Amino acid sequence: MTDWIGRTFTSDAGWNHLESLVDVGNRMAGSEGEREALELTRDALAEAGARGAHVDEFDIQGWARGSSEIRAGGDGPDAAAETFDAAHQCIALPRSPDASATGELVDVGHGLPEEFEEADLDGKVVRVSSTVPDDYDRFIHRREKYYYAVEAGAAAFVFENHVEGCLPPTGSVGTAEAPVGDIPAVGVSREAGARLTRRFEGESVTVTTDCDVHDARSGNVHAKLGPDTDEELLVTSHVDAHDIAEGAMDNGAGTATVVELAHALAEREDELDTRVRFVCFGAEEVGLVGSNHEADRADRDAIRAVVNVDSNVHGRTLTLDAHGFDELEAAAERVADRFDHPVATSGDLVPHSDHWSFVKHGVPGYMVAAESDTRGRGWGHTHADTLEKLEVRTLREQAILLTDLVVDLAGAETTVARRETDGIATELEANDQAAGMKVTGDWPYEG
Image (cartoon, rainbow, N blue to C red; front, side):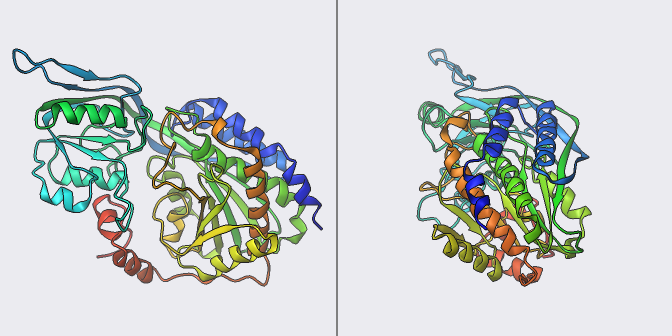
């Protein structure tokens, strides 16, 4: 039966939910907007026919963005002071402390480990790019660069977007053990960063962040379809987004796709041999808090696989990182062959997004995103992550492919072997990913 394909390709359920999410406004972890978005998602899953839809709440470290600025120059009699404080120039990074720091501005280029090692950064204000060179063998996450700066004794951290358009980037700092970072941190636009470095490199600058640090609550949305089996398949996304934008791509799109999947899977429920549990996480953008909460409380041995959808609709071709689980790559390729539709697969380990809370324990899991011709987030984590950059056609196409993938994985004949955590740790070491995870406090293994 293929009637479900036509209904999914003409469905407005996912797109309508995406519009509802972006219209909430601020979906920052722990905010009233995040709570509203969680409840909207709960209700959307229930409307799709999923059972037991509810929100599981938990405590988090709350953080709200105030003003921020970089003040430079004006020390000499003829020196002109300049302040970078406009919304298109400079914003505080989430979980930056409420603080001010002054030091000599030092440009550390792309913020590669070797660039940090070569620089004297004690008491300095560190400026780094949000990207890495095209020929560098791995992407270096913002938090890794931040904690290299902290370890070097820097006074403040300036994270410059490599994407043009007056778009200062956001993104959290902090660790699970110390959710609020050690030094003030700001994101600056490509244009403001270039002007700041050109005019004031080597001079004293002051970075000030005005932030409200408080106790807060977040939550995860749960619902289920299929038989009441001991084993289950998780279909996940994250509902929260950064406060500066609509969060359409990251990750309204992923959650909208999960809602569309729920509608399609409800039609195909009699084909499911294994229970499918939908979990739409809160507090992803501040350290995978929601998914770690769920991974700690769940029976991980009962999870056949995790299909985590995060930032997918901005490109038509799905990318499925399978983290070395050969059976997951094979399932994705079967779906691509059945539909004669391109799907990009990779076995690389991606220690970011909510799948990682499970994969690090050896649970099979995908990171589902979309193919891009640029390195990094593009419009993501900026004011420009807005709805009009996405297309309903793409959401529908991807929902069809992912629905069939979930049915395949839920089949009685499908088995996906777990990985030993020692092997995952060894691969991370071999890929030069371990050192960065250790400096950010994200290394889950001994040694």
